[in-house]
Image (cartoon, rainbow, N blue to C red; front, side, top):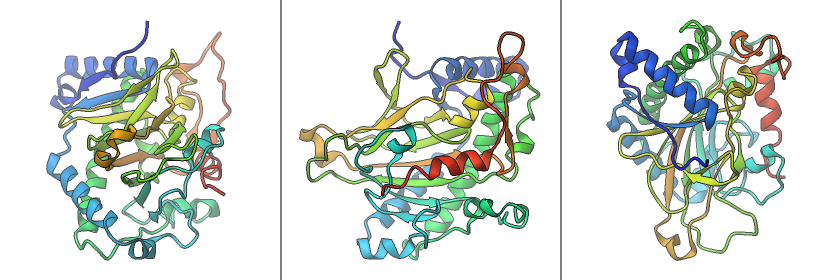
Length: 329
């Protein structure tokens, strides 16, 4: 039987602290992670005004002339910081597909506190703990996106604790694996499509996310997010007011020995007759564990008759391998 809706879960009972409520939330989250790898959450604790401010200043930035926006690109053009223009990235490549580049532009921020000293002994880690690039306009950008990042950082930690309970682990199991994370927070802008896309070109090509989990806030416009279902169909991901989308990344699938799903997803183009109303924004929080966190099969996900499918790998090494395939060139 096909899946016709993304599971919607209220996290308020977890936040209220009752044992029964917390257990029910963890069980429901666990079922969603096993069957589809996507869920829609309410009762998450992030104030709507924090989300609204981040969307507002991001929209102001993306409305700037191209020559102003490109002043805030990373020097190497690769680092997940600052501005990346339309059609400069190609996420489908990370999934082994050759398609034209993605029809979106992005502005990335990463960890707010310096972490470079801790990882000085791992030169490859420097890229992921780069200093943030902040635009000169709008003036409130840094404050609004910092507030957004911190709120979603708290929510991501809460979700990882829910995951731990759902996986029959101590609630704090993941705490010391994400306390020096290199999570990114991209603001994504999908401009109105003026000309016909190239064959196979999407707003964002089919891919899986790289880290442990993703939290996404977005507005509603034609041409949106879709998740690939087990039966091969594509299902629209459409949270309602006050809701957020959450999906698993490759590291969580690897941690759970494929018990949980890092589901393929994409952002499709709007129908030709609705292009004029298709301007779209999203802001995501991608939880990437500490660079040196070991991603190895969890004890609760392997055993007799169920051997580990993947060898251990550092989170940062896993991420670097994925990123090297993402740039269009």
